[in-house]
Image (cartoon, rainbow, N blue to C red; front, side, top):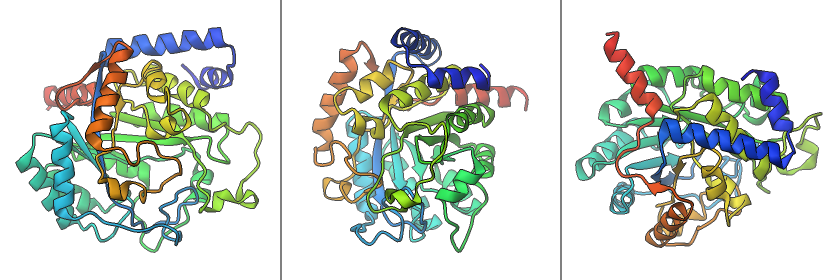
Length: 354
C-alpha cells in the first residue's frame, strides 16, 4: 500500500467501503496475532515532567496539576495487582521525571521480577542511553516511546526544547532495538497542524521503523495547554480530524501495514467512545488493552488529557467488566506475556544469522 492509497482510505466516508477496510484489517489481525486480547496493567508512577509539550496536561508549566510520585512500595504493589488480575505485563508510565533516576527504576524492575513473572514495559519518555541500558540489564522487556508525528516542523512546534536534550526519538527507537528491547511507538491523530498527508507518512513510518508495538489515539484538547487557545492553533488545509472514525481508519491501516505488531485499543479512544471504543478498535485490527492499576487516589492527577474513563473504579472491578466486554465480541483474554509476534520473529532471525 503506497502513500496515495493510504490518503485515499483516510478520506473515505462510504460506510460500505469502510466495512471492507475493517474486515480486511480484522482478518489480517486474526491471521498474524490471533484472537486473544493481551491485557497490560498500566501503572502511572509519576506525573512530574520536565517538558513543556504544547498538547499535554502534565507539562511542567501547568500549575493546576497536583503532582505525585509513587513510592517503591506502591509501584511494586501495583505490579502485583496486575499479576493477580492475570495480566502478563505491567507498564510503568510517567512524565519525563528526572527524579526517577536510573538506579531507582532499575531497583524497582529487579524487585518486580523477583515477586512476579510479569513482562515489564517502560514508558518514561526520552532518557539517556546509560539509563536505557541499565534498565534493560535490570530486566525491563519493552520500551514505549511515541514519536508523535513524522513531520519535523510539527514536532518542533509542539515540543519546545528543554535544557538537556537527549538524542532524537527516532534515533532512540533504533538504539532501543539494538539493546534488545521490544520497542513500541505511535502518534496522536488530529493534533492541530497535522494534515492527512502527514498522517499517512506516520503510518508509513511505523513500517520503516520496524516496530513491535504501535499505539495510535485521538488528540484530546486539554484546557491548560497552549493548544487550548485558538490563537495558538495553526490553521492548515486538509487537517486530520481528531475523531473516532479517523482513529479506527488509522488502526486498520496500521494493521495492514504492520500485520504482526501488537496494536492497542487506546484509552484516549475510549474517552471519545466510552460505550464501544474498545470493542470497535478490537474489531478494526487492535489486539491489546491497557487497564489502569494506578492507585485510585492518583489516577485523576495523571491528567494528560481530560475525561479519562474509569478514573475512580477499583482495578479488579474494571478488570471483570473489561473481560466480559472482550468475550462478548467473540474474543478471548490472553494468558502469558503476550510478546509481539513481530519481535519474536525478529529475534529468531537474529539468532539464525548470528
